[in-house]
Each structure stands twice: as C-alpha cells, then as structure tokens.
Length: 410
Image (cartoon, rainbow, N blue to C red; front, side, top):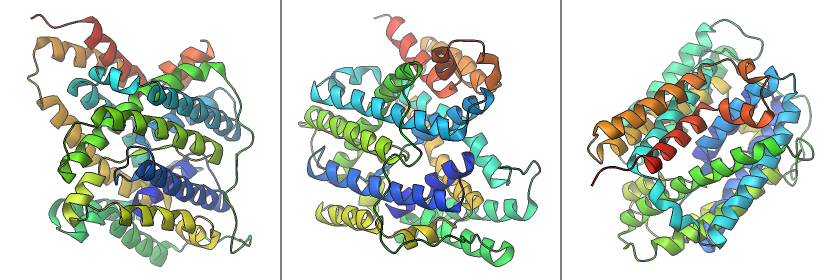
C-alpha cells in the first residue's frame, strides 16, 4: 500500500508546482484516503483483500486539466479546486451506479477491445509527462538535467529488472526498492530537499486543502465518463482477485455493485481530502499469488496502519523529500506491465476487419488529440474544451460508441 501510495502524489505535486510542505500534505492525505478506502471496501464493499491505489485515469485528468487551465490563463489552485468538485461529482455517479444496480448492467460495454484501448491510451498519455519528470524538465527547467536523468533511468531499470526477473518478495516490492535506491543515490550525489517550516508531531489531514471546491458545469460530462470507465477497473480487480482466491463467479454482480457504490464514497472522500481518487488495484491478485497470503485480516490491519500513519506529518515529510524524477521513473516502469495488459486484452479475441477499423479510428483521433496544443480549443465552450483536450477520454469514448453502434454480423 505504501509503495503504491507514494509515487503519484509526488508526480502530481511536481505538475502543479507544489512546494515541499504542500507535497508532504498531499502525501499525508493520500495515505489517509488509501487506508480508509481499502478498509471500507474490505469490510463493507466488495469485501475482498484488494488494495485501493491512486487511479491512473485521475492522473490523466489532473495532467490534462493542469495544461488546459494554464493555457486558459487560470491558476493551478483554481484548477485543483475544480478537480475537487469533479471528484465529488464522479463519486456521486459511482455511488448511484452501485446503489441502483446499474454497474453490473453496463458491464457488456467493457469488451476486451475497450479495456485494451483504455490501458494503451492511458500509457501513451501519461508517458510524456513521466518522461519529462525523469529528464528533469519540470518547473523552470527547460533543458535535460544529466545527473538527474541518469539517476532516474537507473531507478527505472532497477524497478523493471526486479519486477521481471526477481522472485518472491523482491518482485513484490520492486517499486518500493527502486524508489529507495534512487532516493539514496540522488541524495548522496545531488543533496536533498529541506523544509524550513516546522511540522507538528500529530495533525489531522486537512479538508479541502486547496480551498473550497468550485462548480463548473462543463466538468459534469467528464465526471460521468470517468465514472463509467472506472467501473471497468473495479470489475477487473474483483475478477482477478477472486480467481486467485479460487472463488466462483456466483456473487460477481453483487460484489461489483457494492464495490462500485463504495468506490463512489471513496472518490467523494478523495475530493474532500483534495487528493487523487483511488480505484481497486488489480495488482493485488499478483501480490496474493506471490505471497500466498489469502486471509483478509492482515489486509484490514495494513489499511488501519496506513490510516494511522497519516496522522503523523513527520513521516510524510520524510517521504515527500523523494525526488520527483525518481518517483516518475518508478511509475514509468510499472507502465511496461500496463502495456502488456493492453496487448493481452486485444489478443483475447480474434482481430477481424471491424475491430481493426474501430481501433484504428479511435487511435488516430484519440492519440492525435494528445498532440494538439491546449490553446486550439480555447475558442470553444468550456464543456468541449474539457472533453476534447483529453485524448484518453476521446479515444475510449470512440471505441465504446463504435462497438455499440457497429454490431458484428452473425
């Protein structure tokens, strides 16, 4: 849980140019939301030992809105306040989908073609941001920082090597080990960050840390689409963990609805805590398989421990000193497996001319959108700007729409 919760807040902090203290606060709130989300799901939601992790799709939304907000002349703080409301709205949609048993009814739209496209769009959209972070191209830096980049790539290959070739606990903790090694090397060669401000030994995570959420109706469609796409993540995680535990499919529909409802609650909590919303992590299945630990109690205890850690700022202050280049590198290494998951999804069914055409159209327009400057949409209504500037949403929505409208011949 700790390894999964560390990297993304640091990446988001660097994108929004948060200072040391603000990043420490973001990590503190992330620990709180990951801990409470995992506990709520394990006890009342799908009731499986599935770790909640900061969601890749939300990193995509955070990244795109940072760019479009800056191009429109807005401030990063204003964008973060709008994101708080977006997560609150998305959480509301997810809660309703689960409470009214809509989640299990829309499962058929998440075909292997849709899920494979989503994962590949996600990796393409975020890889540019992560690579910039690895090269030190953030903030005021406009040129590659050689030493920073060298340490970042070393971290990348350590994480990739351990996760691919190591066995047992070394493979399970590849991200954590890579971050620690990269962090230590960076500190020895380049020094580390220090904070002048004192932090209390104990404090509660701050509610609406970036200010009161601001309502922008143009973000409502994005919240709805993000909620629908998030269901595929919930389904994949529940299915993978149940297979690992050797459980049947008889309760899948009920668990998907409960899991979706509590994902809605957890997303609203993340909005209130001003951090990245969580999703059930499908990687939990791999962790269970490697360790052989199938009991739920240790999982609940771990969630409580992480939740408890969030109340002690000195702990998060130390963790927030991890260089963003190292965090970006560790996260980039995990995306290699995500590309593999995307390809595996495509190969689950034969690719006929219909599917190839659907994927081709979606890729041309989805990935093409990612390379368009944010200012090209500035003359359009805010609703169009927020949707059309996000290539992940454009591409995934196109695949879903074309699959439903263009039915295969019997």
